[in-house]
Image: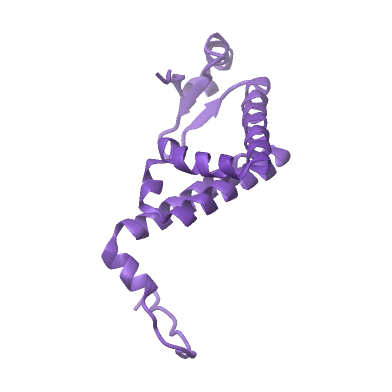
Amino acid sequence: MTTMPAEANFSELIQKPKDTVARMQVNARRGLLLRRRDEEDLYLTTAARADQAVQVVDSTTRMFVALLKESPAAVELLTRVFPEAFPWVRFLPQKAVQEFLLEFVETARASTSLGSLAPITTVIAAWRHTAEIYADPELHATLTQDHGEGDFGDVPMPPSEDE
């Protein structure tokens, strides 16, 4: 079961910074979700806690990389269990699931070396969109049909909003 972080309005942080930070420290394990009215919410945590998250991802990634290098059977096993973490991979062909697994692990390894998890979410989103295409037979057929060879010419500029 996932526990939710404590919440506060961003204005509380501005008006009562000590009290708001104290709430975050009481809930240091989960952090503090700062709600903003017209902007994306923020998440407040300690630098040590954020570093721990990156270290966990890095350690886990290193184990997966070692497994994948050690045994081709590990690739097959991880490919079979991947749908537990990402149920939508069931719509991908088997080869694509393996490609996603390898790209996911390689990107996770590179991302943690930068201290940024953002590239991992980009890989997940891209493969999820690929699964959406495979899940829709009509869309898949449209996107994979043979359009013949050659250049189809210049693409006209879309109309401006003024037109």
